Amino acid sequence: MKEEIMKEKEEAVNPETLPDAGGPTALPEALLGLFADNEDLLEKDTLSSEDEFRLDLLLKQAADEMSPFFDHAAPASLLFPLTLTDFADLSDEELFEALEERTVDLAAAGEPEELAGLPEAIQLFTRVNLFLTEFDDGGFAQYLCEPTVRAFFDRLPEDLREIGAEEHSRLLESFLAENHLEKSGIDALRPKDQPALRKKYNFDLFEEQFSELLPLWLLLTAHARGHQADWIGFPQEKE
Image (cartoon, rainbow, N blue to C red):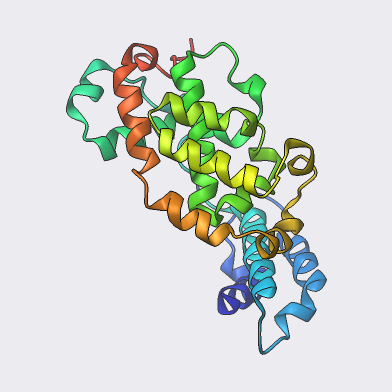
């Protein structure tokens, strides 16, 4: 982990390692600001578990600063609309990837109004997959501490039941109740709170038990197949 951070730092101050962004860039300054704020962390020889979380967060922030300078996947609006043939011919893995590609812009927004007007099956997929993406990347604590992706948290237990993930929903609600994690407290959480939150509650056990259940991506795909009428023709081609 620390080696990755130091590599990011070295590349940030070396313009020859950056792709051409088509104009002047303030990227090195932005990254150097991040590194300067965490210089004490980078100089440590021995890292605590809290230090590891700080490093992980720093790496993600550095990656966010770098992202405008690298190629991205095509926007969902440029992908071909889904067809009956896609649902008939694609494997579960391939279909899930196709669904995810077409909702990634909606998920990135993390705002309920971005989904308004779309068929419910697409809204449901986007909400649950937003949770799944964060969970797979950094665990449940990361999801709770990210305000931009937590917008649909209130609906998560119900959404899980809707796709057939009853065990997941019961486990989630049990963890929240046992630890007295209520909406008012969760709404106040920010990324910097993640290390302390993980130290206070047994997220490791919850995440281990949750990961042993049937994969959510598979349940999401099965739900989409059962509601394919909502997906056919999505995304609509722009005139």
